[in-house]
Amino acid sequence: MKLIRKPAPMNRIVTTALLSAVTVVAQAQTAINFNCNDCAGTPHDLFAELDAGKVVVLAWVMPCAPCVGPSLTMRNIVQSYQASDPGRVIMYLCDDYGNTSCSALNGWMNANGLSGLTSFSNPAINMTDYGGPDMPMFAVVGGPDHVVFFREDGTVDVPAVQDAIAAALSATAITEESNLTGAPSIHPVPATDRAWIDIPLAHAARVTVDLYDLSGSLVRSVHNGPLLPGDHRIGLDTREIPAGMYVIRVLAGEERVALNLVIAH
Image (tube, rainbow, N blue to C red; front, side, top):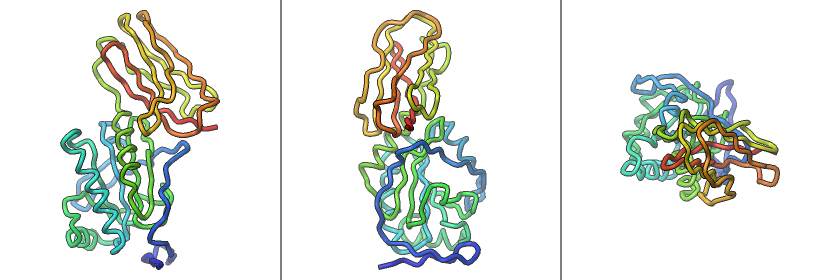
């Protein structure tokens, strides 16, 4: 069965399958910023929201009947974080080409149990920046580096989405700095052969630096031992580590910081 998309700009017609394979972002990809109003007239700046520690799930719909089920599933995943991380995980429902009226988009949402979501119909939120064009399409973005942790077409792989959201939440640095004179950082991003983790210490502390994959599994212990006050640079050889997205977790005394690391060979 094929689904005929509504006409795109320049009268382009796209035919897509109802279901498609899940796509996990395996190479460096960052989100594309947008600054526009939602259908309620509220202004949004994506990067400002990510910098404030939010994780944003972008959902593009035609809207269409096959878009309903996956969108409901994604909405339920997002809502499941409201108890543990209130207000930090949010979902934006976007018209695919930004050429459906807001009244029609909101009517479709309300008729299909999706009322209450923030909706957009604006071409500034361009789904082709994230792939596509299978419907519906989802992307999970977050962290101070504005990383795309996950994208998916047509269906929702619940465990994979949960892993991506957890990784995006952990990418936001802890702000307490009794042992730190500033925020640890990592460079270059993406890393090819070697990455460097800079840790500025105000006081002597035991420091551990560990590398995790997006499922939360430990990939490598990078450093574990005491460090004196001052600026420290710790190296990580990435040549034997598969390309992809990872999280570096720095523990300095009782203070924990998570950093995004993208490895690209």
